[in-house]
Image 1 (cartoon, rainbow, N blue to C red):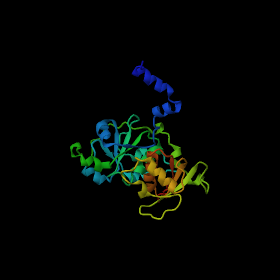
Image 2 (image 1 turned 30 degrees about the horizontal axis):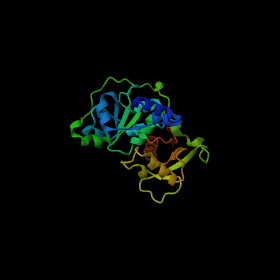
Image 3 (image 1 turned 60 degrees about the vertical axis):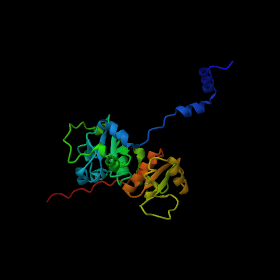
Image 4 (image 1 turned 90 degrees about the vertical axis):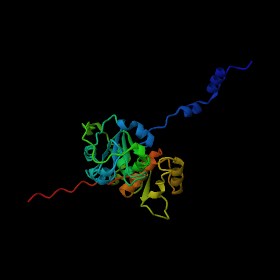
Amino acid sequence: MNPRPGVLLVLLAISLPPAVVAAQTAVRPPREVELLELDILRQDLALLTVLDIRPFQVYLKGHIPRSFPVDVARLQEAVLSGPAPEPERVLQALGDAPLRPDRPVVIYDLSLPGRNDGWVAWLLSYAGVETVNVLDGGFEAWNRRKALGVFSGYPLPMARMALRAEGLTPRLHLRADPARLPGEAPDGAAFVTVMPAGSQDLSAGQIAVQEVLDERRFFLYPSHLETLLKSRGLDPEKRLLLKGEPADMGLVWAALVGNGFKAAIVMEVTAPSPQPPAP
């Protein structure tokens, strides 16, 4: 007599090794930054805080509805508060964006990858903003869907429900202080020098920024980055400490952590020079 289908399924489940069952039910751990698909943004637009990091004059000509302009230069100045970026200054640099604890943040540049989306994602993540996303394709992807529409001008002021800086806890593991680093990387970590776009003939420990900027691969294929890291003598299991120009480091950092690797930016924060006394 053949067993009933339900009985057979139960027997198969019992016979599976525990490790196989765990692997089938395992949930991917959250990444420091996620890549958000256009259709999800369109559906959940009212539930998100959307930040446009393109130049302001470009924003005025057309932007995603409900998005707010952010001056990247002000954000970069926010790190000059030594010895590390202060969440309060980061929040102030976001301008009118109505940050709320229950709303994920979505960043978009002109395209993906843009020049500053990785850098801004790192700064907000470091400052303690809980959920940071980068829009897949950027504004160009949105604008290709003409039916979605764009807004021009500046949105009417909203009742700002500000995320209080006291509620933010900086994620110290996302930044390494060069003053505290020895000449060699600490145990369990490896230095990665991020080279400018166009760099060739790279040696061990170096990654050129364009190597992680393929739009078909950015965030999407961990195996591609794993192969790249190994080809430069880097262990993908180690914590990677990035050195280089901030915007370049931000893009490489976003590509790495978006694929589940552990990475931090070696960021030397300089306190602003004191103003001379008024005559």
